[in-house]
Length: 236
Image (cartoon, rainbow, N blue to C red; front, side, top):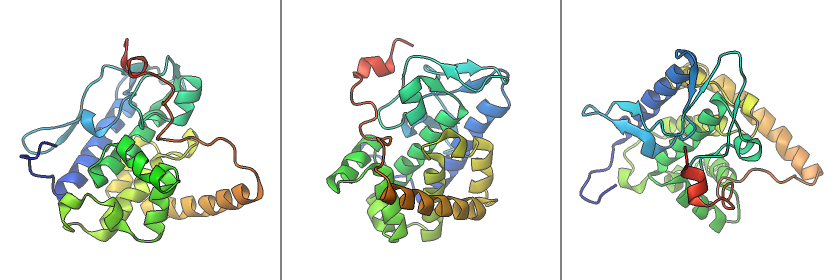
């Protein structure tokens, strides 16, 4: 954001989150064939004069038949936003967009790019999403929320958006909600139940990792570090 440009207030950020979710849900559920965007990030959410969100930049988008579960391509996208299964297999689906959307929510809340956020987390020797989980658990929202908001936000709304972001960025695609579910959660329907379920699963995961040597989990900060920028962005 240019210094001369005023920061977006909290109400507008919430509208952007919902508008972007509705746009992606439309691409996934109401287009035939469905459209997989493959590069969901804050920079690709455009705003009109009324600050209504429009999903933009379809340069990496792929069409997918409804009978298919994924499309397989060379890995393209933006560092910090690429879902782990897409990075490891080249298979993208609606759920890779859901992952990117979850990371985008964190950008919207913090006012920082995902890659910069990951560097902050790495300063504390943890991966980005573990860092976010810890701050949410300790209710240290002020560490996460964009300082430019100067405290002008509603705590429980921030918590809800962070919860949605964490649901969207789960490591296993099947565990992530569909974008239509995300829309409903942002509209106040079903988030509490889904979050309670996530917390139970998270406790189980932590117990399992405590008793077993954890495998090489996905890392947002470094998920694409071995790919050159030109390999990520083109050719399309």
